[in-house]
Length: 254
Image (cartoon, rainbow, N blue to C red; front, side, top):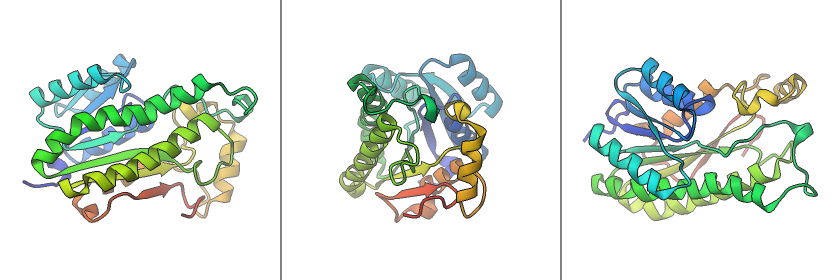
């Protein structure tokens, strides 16, 4: 079978808005079938699916819930075929407002666990449904969405960054296990993006400070990061797995 982007069935978690919507739009632009997964933003997800065309569907599931994810995959198989490509973008609700962030003295276990459930438990529930079809096909592409805060915690968002760090580890261990089945697993890590719902609370001065510190002298957009996700789904990355590509205008090297 062809592994070109236009022949793939792509599931993007948390795709009703922000970066997820940009990733779904990028795949649709390249002709792929796209499943816009959403937890609660039904109207936005359905509006995006209508905008992107008939090869796109909005399907609800809370990625933390294995039964809901199983039902989503069943519906996808029935209407679009087996999922070949999984992009785990969903995050627990979060606002990147440095002035209002939790410090180590105010952070609770629930805050930490909430972020980890969506990042890591969500990745696990999605992988467990995707692996059988990908293994049967001898082909699969998994892309997780990370953060350059793991490498450079310019603002110490403890719970969010810890969850993304754990997701990076899971990305690499999954790559080690799934490689023999022809499944690659990689991460794309952004920095602060201009602009998503999560970064809407970020003061302009922070955007300006980050832009000034990057070689490209600007803040990355969701569309720019989405294009990097396409690379890991494309035949061009067929020999790449277990990697973390940082897309932030060069703010973080490595």
